[in-house]
Length: 372
Image (cartoon, rainbow, N blue to C red; front, side, top):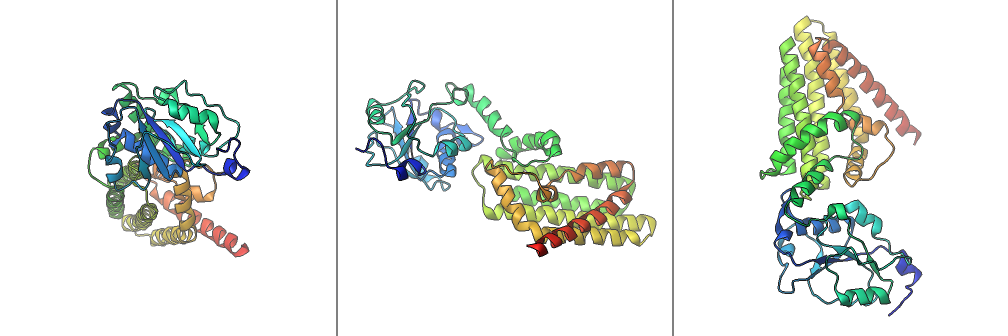
């Protein structure tokens, strides 16, 4: 056995994980946000980039065949209580701990400088401990004590932590202060249903189009109703991504569908505000403002749609980047300003700002694109 490991081995990403399960098999199939505990850990490892999972259980008579039966699972799963490395790089984790993808990703590079500390594990087989002492191909990840599920009462606490982690790393100010708090309450409800993230996105689209219909009426109370319904649409829109991340149902198509529906709602809302103001005042300028707001927003969306989807997927993985104009186009904070303008009966100010601002932004984007 190679005790030192070659440079290529020590710099490569670990793609095999060993999950050690203390003998409490009933717990591993208890749901956390509607995903069984053991399956959630396996899917977390899969999302981090692990290709092969070896489940090593203290209870030798228990089979984990159900892991392979889940359609979300693409991992190569084994549950043999023996481990032959054959120069394979391995990370060892505690299966009674709720794993976090960002921590797994950070630990996937095998370091030549690490200690085989097994003291925090509730179960660690002697055969594996001996191999860890003989080779540096085994990287032991000590359990994170606050994330360990020791008794039944730990499950509600862990689920609450999961719900609070459902936001995006590039959430705007109002998303963090207000929107995510309300969307988490809706997520609790949607988790108990069979609704898919894309179905929730479509529900948000319908609510947003209903909001546009109210704005189209052109009255004071219909304007307030439209602004409130648009808020509800945005809150529901937050839950689709939260559900997708919690249930491991994220797809590139779903991200594109979400962004597409968001912008369809915005286009109809801008158009309807302009038409509603025209019906209320008879001033044809408001039709022009509504059309300009739609045109500017559509142009900006066509230029940046691919970037928005990419940044949303990166934020969903917890990757952070410097805030820029792309984030401003994708955020929902303007809906709170719209509600204030509706309440003080000044939707005319809102649609004028939308018409001017969206087109200035679109011109700026076209200028930037021409330079590159």
